[in-house]
Length: 309
Length: 297
Image (cartoon, rainbow over all chains, first blue to last red; front, top):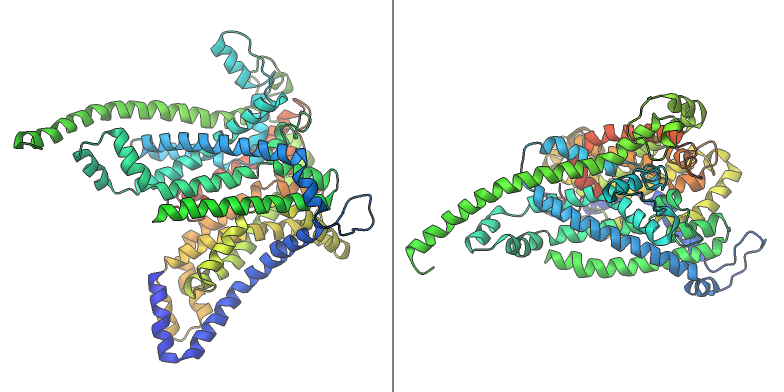
């Protein structure tokens, strides 16, 4: 960065402004293909979705009249929107909190070198490398009340027959989704936090130890402040990712029983491709974008930027 | 801190304490490591196990943990039917999207790293593209593909080209951020000296910088491939029969309890193993890759 930043000025000074202009044009030409693709396949569709969201657009109507904010007004009082948001929120908070705590514990335990690390690490990251739909299939079989390994294991521990229909009730199904996500993504949290911890200056620990700081104090006063930005980044990455949860819902419950385990992605998918209410689905989509933009902006300003200082 | 004796004794005592703790710490480390490894690997072994069990074994209560009569019949059956096409489609679509996004993305990344095109704001704008849940775009994509398909069916719904284009665009922010960091790491002087010798910027890029950035290129490309390989939402919405990918085919077996778990598992293993092989390639870049370079691994 520094090298590149310092050179253009000096070179431009010797060859005059035409060089800087040429350089700029050249730069944008190289970016152009990427920019065109993004405009064509992200910006343009987003604008189209915005227009759709002000229209009545469903299977019955041949015409697509503009109906102003009606879709948005309907969405804000739609119990399924709120139910799906609540489910999504529960999964996000539950999964990310558990992943963070487990990941941090593991990272603190495994920081530094030890025998077998080179062998264990590649095995630990395997869950992240499994396609979410395959994770869904695998855990769908594990959670199964009759043929699954989870009830069987619990039966052994309890010493009696355990028959929990995990995916048949809202609360236990959401719990199952959280545990499954924790299985897949704790390794990510662990490795990111481990990378952060490995970067903390070891002299700080020595200084803390000489000052008589115990384990807890050096964790609170050295480790955590030292990796606060890494923590902030890891949490926002995971939270935005879990918020999209779709594959697990598809494989576990299809939103059921009833609509009690719908996630917001699942509901929009249903609106669009089961009910074919494209205008309404677009309005709900836009509410999601607005919601996430606000949350992410506040979060980045508060935690990521704040932690940098 | 009152006398000399105190200041010298304290570190010594601390050292003794630390030594005792080190033994405990090592024991706890390995105990936890074993538990975590079992928890991590068990589900993967379970799906592999189910793929070689006959229905009599995987549909039994209490379940059979270790396959008693391993069989490859599910692999044969599923690959004879939809598995083969799905595997072929996945390879075509993931490769196509990877090549395109690496080509287009590297050019943009190079420009942003060397020429500061667009500055920091442009880079973060790109990053924000990744924040958006993909479900937001399925409705307009659907209408777009339907219209394009009426003009040219090979580019519309249920076509390879449609998924390649969508995955390319979704990979672009990632590829650009990763490659920008790798290009930043190649000193500009190396390239400028080549340009002074009379070669054009594009040739200097191609002959000097590109070879030096190859490790980054491989890591980034592998991640792009893995992301495309695993994607499900777009694939399930925009394909029907011809362009169905592996995740869609695996999900196609869901439905009622126990139905065809053997074949579903076999196909799941087919989808899983290539990624494990690729994961070995990018192991070192894992943290950086999954945080778009926000955290250095």
